[in-house]
Length: 319
Ligand SMILES: [Zn+2]
Image 1 (tube, rainbow, N blue to C red):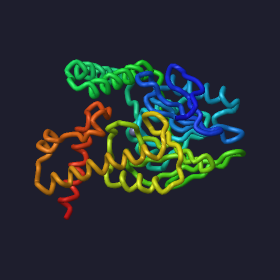
Image 2: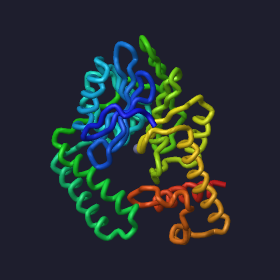
Image 3: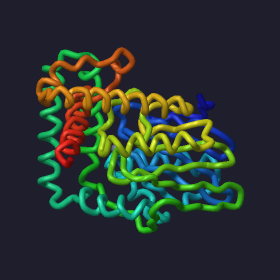
């Protein structure tokens, strides 16, 4: 989906509609997540800034070459590094996020001491190497290899990495009205992270979803119940094309898949809890349903089985 306009070392640019472009990350190259570009008429808006400044620099360059306009706004969908570590490249732009994302950004994305940071990242990379060597399952092995390559790219750029925090904040909705095109930013709550924002271009019926939607990926779940509620709300919107946080551009079918996945996890956990199955037994006996078997993830489905189990078991205790 989407006509391919150009391919760089880091990403492929696809045209989703007039003035609306997706920059789809090439795995293992330093972009890690997808970014979006909207030509507002006299200036540009960029959605998410990739995992490294070098990928972000290429994004800014290509966006400006493509349109002959300058980037005025950068939106951060959520605080995770793979979507915001390129922020420094857009220092002159207005950087926008939800107020809650800014809080988590300030709290979590901190480089206290670069030497320690370099050592710890290297240790993590070594640990990944060891895991890759020992992993038997192909999908998990490939996911670990991708994680390894992305972390190695980040490690190289750590010495020049700066954390640039969003300064224009919103809660639920923000409209950015350009000369030719308007976009709407929405936050329906916290699903994959404590606060997940997405962009909707109403005229073009295109949405940049951040990690509310990813393709064939066991992405981390922050709040399983809210995740479902939020995606059902997204379903009521008039959206024809979607750019997910990870994966290729698609349609509302990607939202349906996510809903199926979350509903599957929820049902499996609630069933297990009703029979008082322990977490260990639940995880070790779980058989991944056919449709989700080839999904990527450095821990496969395990992390989500655990997080959803813990969520509902805690909830059960509250009654
Ligand atoms: Zn994320």
